[in-house]
Image 1 (cartoon, chains in turn yellow, red):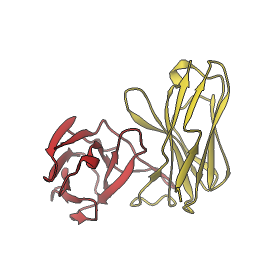
Image 2 (cartoon, chains in turn brown, green):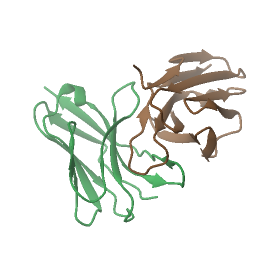
Image 3 (cartoon, each protein chain N blue to C red):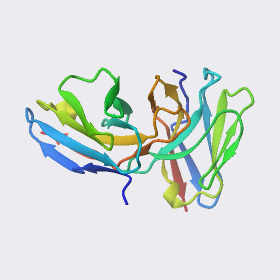
Image 4 (cartoon, rainbow over the protein chains, first blue to last red):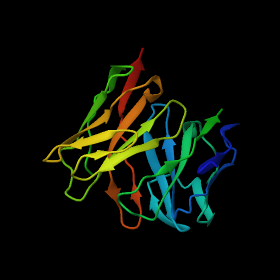
Length: 114
Length: 112
């Protein structure tokens, strides 16, 4: 009964390739997020979707394109991968925009660009 | 955004209480204090949150000072499985969605 699941868990690819990371949550939440954790372990938000609508876009290069086919899914597509994209990407979800509710995180996707 | 300041690392003996401090001197009156932790190679995990009053749940207790400029997370009986990076976060509300702004956290090492 995984609440927030991401696939794949590991992804190794060459520079210039296009890849996607999938995320699904079975918690009935309206809001989903993508976070990036770099090699220095800084964890930063990239995007937030609320009921399939983009709410937060934190100055992420437009090579990154989130797609939300429904409120239970938020996929991350990355074009023309660069070495600097190597990181762990976490998907998360929370109930709709309430300030005092917790976010549930997936286990992360470790992306390595070679 | 209110920023938080935490010590980079702490040690705690197993079975003892772990007290993790956090300063958030610029917190606004309607901002909550959240604590998350990240065990190695896992996603962040919610622990507890509070506004003004002290809070307790099955995982931890949160003590917030009266002026709300600092707080302490207490793990009453630390175990080896509590070894993790602990993040103190002040919740930012950007309208219909709110984001978590993670700092560098405190790396808690629980030892035998």
